Length: 144
Image (tube, one colour):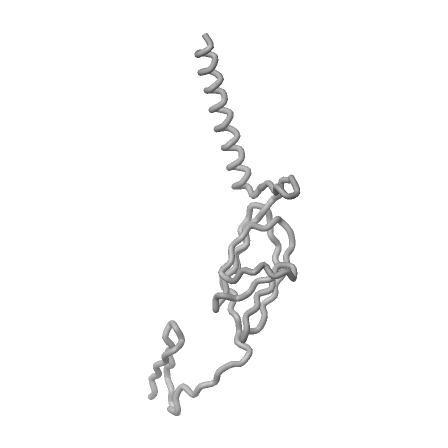
């Protein structure tokens, strides 16, 4: 008799564990998370940043997060001031709005050098076509 009751209670416990786990996973997928420091639920979004060149410092709301690009992290829904800095390049600044359960991706932050390097590509007078390699280190030209 006790064995049957134990088996039935085990089935109920297993079913309850599946329902709770499913609910938690769906809530997490919708952007909810639990902050153990404040003991509150919060709605989060995902922020993805990448720069060219990579390895730029990141500040969020004026505070350095001690991470470099590429960067990916969840943030609580709201407005954020994002600063990307790198020595030898102009700073990048943007105000971003993070929405709950959405991805905010800024994959093409192009850092502009503070001092541009000038080079003479050719001394030909009649250059018809100038083509650069994908790494922009080599150029070819066709003159007429």
